[in-house]
Image (tube, rainbow, N blue to C red; front, top):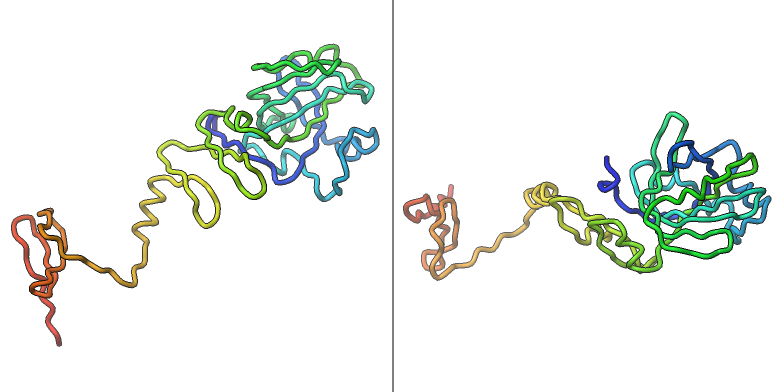
Length: 241
């Protein structure tokens, strides 16, 4: 599955992860040797008042199937050095899960000065040393611009959030089905139509029915059903037994 085929998803919980650089790539290796949540608590990284059960990880929320909004901070000696916002996804590699920074959007330098970007910023990895770490959390979008960074995405609202992405797949329709807004393919739609269970079918009497082979109409003059065999209309006879 390519990056363009992955759907953009909003996390149901806040995520927290630690990562390190992968040499000669822009990807970041998610590390599990240290608990990211415990690390954040120990070094007062501003994680708020959420309970432990309210936190999750990128792997748990998204796996390798979805794109998501990320925020990362480069820490040296547990102090912020620079940061980046964007859209990315997880890849499964021999070393473990890695964050692929697919659509970077904003970079902040050590003075907090921000700039719009379109490529992963190499400053994240500059002068990497033993005290360096990368702190990653997911981000919840707060504008339509955030959501539509990914191509072929529609924005819809829910009670929980006014900005939710729906990736519109090739040859599909978008709609509300059983309370959720999602895609439905033409194949799935056809299956649902053919599986309809009708308790009553009411046919009307057209003034001049179209002569299409296989058509069935109700004739209110003869009080009977008629079908067109390709040449003439024939009456369907009901013989009572």
